[in-house]
Length: 496
Length: 108
Image 1: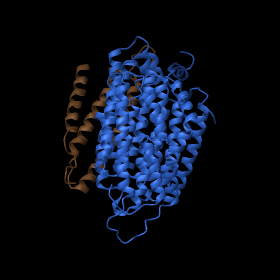
Image 2: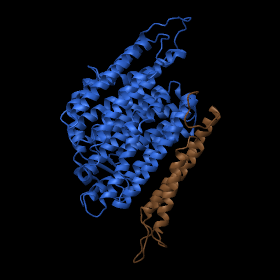
Image 3: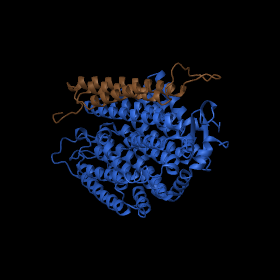
Image 4: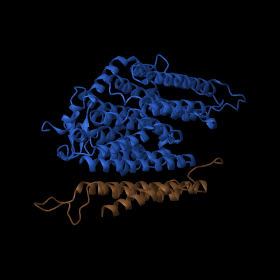
């Protein structure tokens, strides 16, 4: 059982998707999906606890040994990201089961396949396999994005699909180059061959640059980030909340490739250009929050802002910076998802005003408080997790060469976000409606949606309260990530 | 042989990029198809070019690398599925909006 644990976060949602496709009755699909996601949460929790012993666990698919077969690699980072994925999956599935899944067909199998792709992308140790899991994740996300219908979603979907298909083509070119020069697709094997002399360093450099460009497209680095905001604000609330982790897949991939393969062999590939572009992304997203016309659009800009802040970190090979990045990643994913769910609740309470920033029917007071908590965390205000994350990023990035510029941009962006959230939140929630229409009672929210939203909103204070143990864990994760020798030895075995 | 393959990949990529930059969904779809052809040929070349060699290792005989062929097969399947989905999406946008422009413009 222990030996097969690493494959379970991929197998459980896959089996659930098959079971759900066998019978399309909604109660059955909901029950299977819910059971599978709870099971996945337990397995990922167990895996996270097991992997905290610092060992790199390798699962060889079909029992073919590492450089020849495909392997799954579980270290602290991979286990933690799949746990985050399971938590987010459970909350968004709960929210979607309150009626969102009735708006189109096949929501539940696609949702489970999206979880397969996400977990697979975090766990795999093979770059071509990473491509395959990216495609599983993207194909599910294309259809989930279109779920519910409407021209806006179709249009946003076309741009999103075209851009990601071009990204996939670039990914394949990079993989072809890497295989042609290094003769392997296994990340650990690649890292050890890069240190040898039997390859063309210029070609390997070009290939890794292409690979990083593809990951930057997924993460939303500035010249490649114009797709993000229209896509995320067009998606339905639970889908957008699940998408909050998709930009993080690109960031984790950059962190992983940088630490394992690039830092020992090509340490200067990212330096010089990544920090200015990430700062530009942060500035662009902060300006975007000022022009957003609805809460969902604002939340999408905040996802981009957190991606930009995180992209400041991979350049620095210091475990302190990556520790801050991991904590920031956890809290920004959960806060971003919570904001999308709160936006969905507000939209459902305000009839045709939706979540647009104009005075409308009042919403329940617990939703207002939930918005206040999430908004304060997203703006980086104490005492919530957003503040702790931002503080960690700022203090660790202070000593780096671009420290002053980073401080100016991050603090300025924080100010703009605070202004936007305060102003628009007041209009959205506290401004009385000028012409009161006959008071129709707001539609009931239902316990599923309330529970799902509260679960994610509670992350803001909880992550701040447990910041001590969490940052200690993040530190262990970062130091494991920055000891690529153990990763390579763990994957390739002791014979090399 | 190398020159033929390289120029074929180059021409396909150039045509694909040109078509992707058009403003309507149908040329974009064709452009993506051409680009994926170019990528598939490129993946083939990553295992080096061998004539009349089976993808099997036998004593003394020349062989061609079987892995790029497996990769190309995967890439073809995925690319085909994606293109099919994009075609459906483009048709739906055409039916809903009445035109197949990529950029919605000011009016809608």
